[in-house]
Image 1 (cartoon, rainbow, N blue to C red):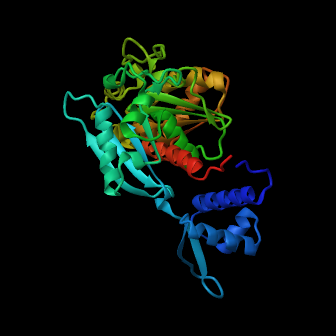
Image 2 (spheres, rainbow, N blue to C red):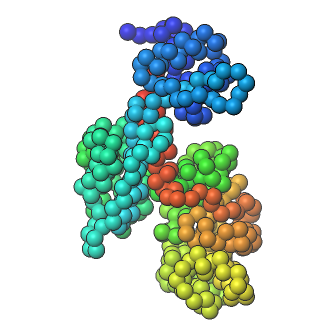
Image 3 (tube, rainbow, N blue to C red):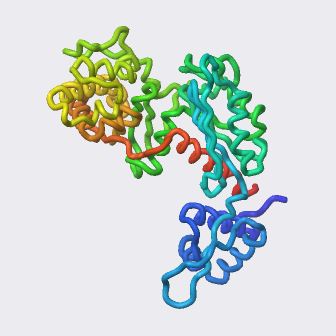
Length: 387
């Protein structure tokens, strides 16, 4: 039956949704705190909480301690209303987390492929099934699954592009295949885009509407955020700077050939650059952070900054971001010292002058970004207002 605008049923549903989203965003709240956030009267808020408790959507969550007078009852969303899964897929690993709808990770699983084994769809299904099974769920019971991977899905065809390193995922509609295999709603997103989402939510880019994130480490890629939204491009390939031609930096005798951004800034290329400056070892964290290395480290960082600046100059000159975030193993380990040098080098190449800073997110930001995307979709579905 169609609901008229302003009908009591519709208003009740809108208020319920507002309350549930406030509880999800801000954690357990008292009735008085919830009143303040959603703008209802005391009786209306009390009636709303009773209704949501009877439907199993909210739970009593202890008491607010430390205030004057009687302790205030806390309310929270019932996390078991829905569960989601986030997957970080690389050529050799699957890192999976299952979360309740409140964002609490309830189970995790990590699978590493045996030598000469290409991880495919059945491997992913099994990897998701393990943590889902730990909380008593089949994969079909998950509200949503988001898979992050080093490539981009063409949303017109569902085919994976820019990912020759994932041979088992080529030549078919990846979204359709995953939805059929897992039996639930599935989204696939580029891994660097997911890192950018995590950075927007809890890192350097909080409150920044226009920024570029450059991932240097497990491959090289970029994510472009304009007016608070990810730019994906017609075929999903926006930000695939690994394949972008990169000129030979002046005085950089360690530059590899042929020269693409990925050739210049891959882990092995960075190690070879360090060795060309007399720095020994393979640990990138140590090579980039060893202040005791003196002039050798300074020269290494300067040449590395020049390579980074050449790789990102084209992106910066086109989109004119407020901020450039350097992420990944190299970007994070280089820290402010590398960022300051990149800013100097970039200033010689392009007119825009964005701030350049290292990433602040930790852990596995690909999986974390996938989890944020999965939760956003699941909450939208779970608390949608029927038409």
